Image 1 (spheres, rainbow, N blue to C red):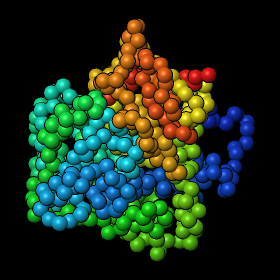
Image 2 (cartoon, helix red, strand yellow):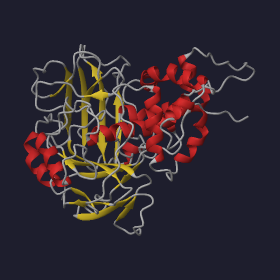
Image 3 (cartoon, rainbow, N blue to C red):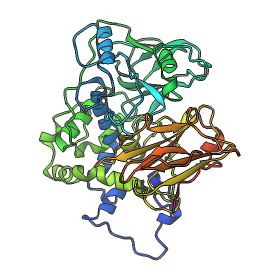
Image 4 (cartoon, rainbow, N blue to C red):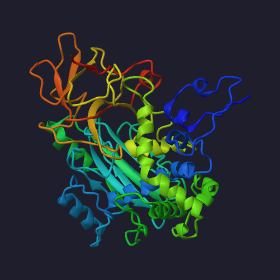
Length: 478
């Protein structure tokens, strides 16, 4: 008998054997009031499967509205000068910036709220693209030995990397086109499967002292439409501050309808009776009372459930990595939804591997009421670019953001000027609310309450990818 693997198992990387009932045991009937049964998808008659399918595109569309200025989520990281520069290059007085780059000239801090779990080791260059009426030209500088990556995310949050690293960091020009563009394919043409695309470039910064040099490289990144007269389409459905069923379905259906040829759109037919109908933003009005009731019951608690599911995904104490399908999810809607919630914009595994924890090595929840040690061994971390450690404070929905710190950095990386090596070559990272009095440790500030940590490895070597190398543990100090 072939046993199915639940969606929870797919996300949490649990062994299938642990999920198979013992022979001779009667199958367990799902409980309609059980959140566990709803999360695992045991209630096939609910909207849970439809939600997991839709959340990635919905969160993409919501984030694109925030990043282009169509909605306000309270970000103040992008300076008025950067916004004015982008608007000037756009050639009109619109406050919605599409098909133009916006250089974030400062490292991410507690002010950025448009993207969850931002890094604090690279300068971001962001461009919201709408390719239905014009291709977009991307120009990259010669970055030399400095890490510079450019990722293109489609509406299902799958990613395509621009081959800058493969070209040795050399300068280059690329044409980014939509799925139906008449432009012929070629070595410098990047055809995206959706018209709505997010371009995110990362330029490495070793620390505050390295900012000016990094900004000089970043300035060479240019995004501009080929047809400067073409007016990009805006979204008609504006994402509200809090998810609610009518606008959730409307925005999901609108973004799906803007790129109907995307390979994943065909699967929407499976959820048509639950309200997933590409191109129909008014579907709520004709939805059955049963489906409306299901959405009204599920959506208010969906993010909390997804967040709690992620907490349970830590099947062992300490560091856990997401599945290797990061950035290329196929039909795995639950993983797509989970990463959209806690790591929107995360790179593919071969470009970066992320390790997340909300517990210490003993399995106790991380808290600013305790202090922790993490020792980077003398041999270092097997990466081709750099590593970093960041600490985040989760909000009520489980999205991760920086918090106010008393020093000029929110993370530590392998190029930081304030790294301190001990005589044996090891580096001791000290995570605590208050600065340690020891001089041979590197202080990483934590918030007062619960926190989570992410250890990033950029261009990881094979031992990082195949798990033959392990991230050093976080040890609570007694």
